[in-house]
Image (cartoon, rainbow, N blue to C red; front, side, top):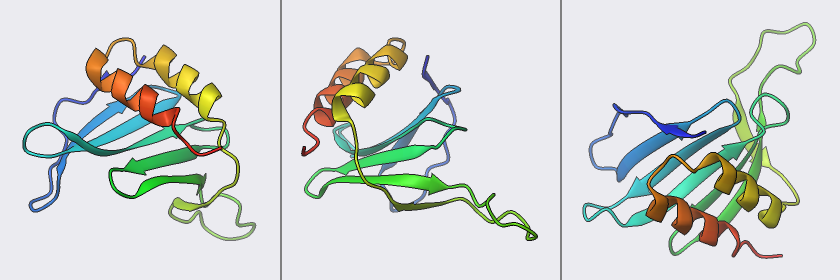
Length: 121
């Protein structure tokens, strides 16, 4: 179950961030001063082909995979980065998010769930 991290570093001049985590998912939510959600990033499949779907109000979606920097034979591990990825199964990941978000603010969880379902086919 996703749990909110209490003390998340805030960066001056940037939108307020909230961070939620569990063994399979991470969720970052950006909001304005009134608490309205401006965007979110949901990372899923942690440790086994991790992917990230990002949504920003006014910009839409971006789906990426995490290159963990491990696949470099004979070289040191590199810093993980996000790289382009193909298909995103919005229905499957929305259901998975719904299962993992039972313990967080339900209005926030519902907003993210409904937004994920609008991912273009």
